[in-house]
Image (cartoon, rainbow, N blue to C red; front, side, top):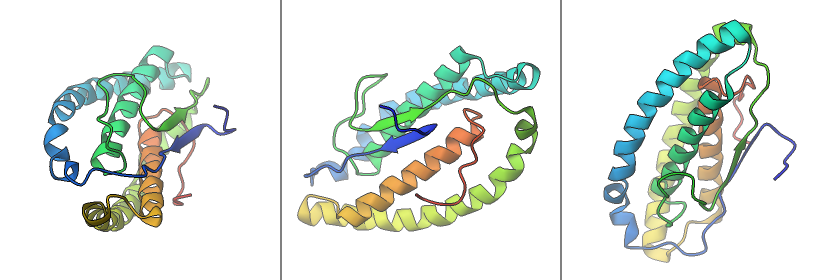
Length: 187
């Protein structure tokens, strides 16, 4: 998949979604939540080490970068499932899932951006909270749409995918996997 960009995420719309599954997805996801919690601690430690690697060498070591990327990829699959966009249970590990996600690992990263990144994350965090509130409202509407019709309306699906794409871009930026600023657009 060559998209010509350093970041790509697409989540295809399911034609039908289970009306009963929307009641228990939160319960089914508990094993993932426990493992991701521990993996998240490891990813944070690797990110801390990656910070100093970028500082001293100008590059995030490939093995560390790949571990953090795999964590974000797994977390993304779980988010897609809990956001009611797909009914397929997320796999434990790297098995296929109905999404396309790719981040290109940069060979060199800016040491200057390393020090000012946290400043950029402040307005991004506020914007993400505002859009997140709207996404939460859309998720409630999606829940009722699935309950009554068995599917999510196209517009709500598109908005939820755009929100997940944007929040993932912010996470990739804050995790130092890229120096590309995500901006404030949901495009």
